[in-house]
Length: 173
Image (tube, rainbow, N blue to C red):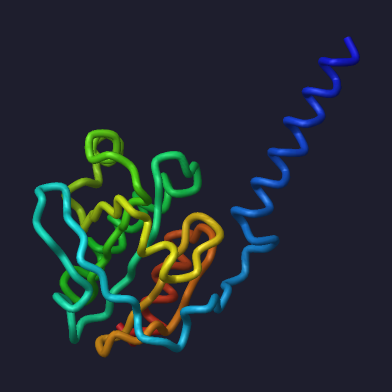
């Protein structure tokens, strides 16, 4: 009986620690180590094997989100990013970079959510993008201006209203 309480206590404590790490202790935006610098360029493949880089979108405002299938907070964000892309159209570019998961798993997930064709999805088998922005929570999102500068590094999830406000504020759209 005591073993059950000990195991349950450990599980609860581990869950609290994981949630604290994911949310970074609060819901405020974090400037992270990347803000104010050039966004890290990348050369990653989309679901069809096409190579895409940040430089492909020079001159456009870009939102780059780091996500994973195992991240429960990423589900709603992916759906909201699809809505955001639809609302702003070609005025912005939204890219979601998966963290080192296989194509079959990731594509099945985005297909089930109905977002696969709504914006750009890239695969990062070495998780290099996440590391390049100093990632430590999930999800993490950077907002990049047309010159490739990071103007905001947001740690943790965002609501659709927060996304819209950031796009309007940061990109004057």
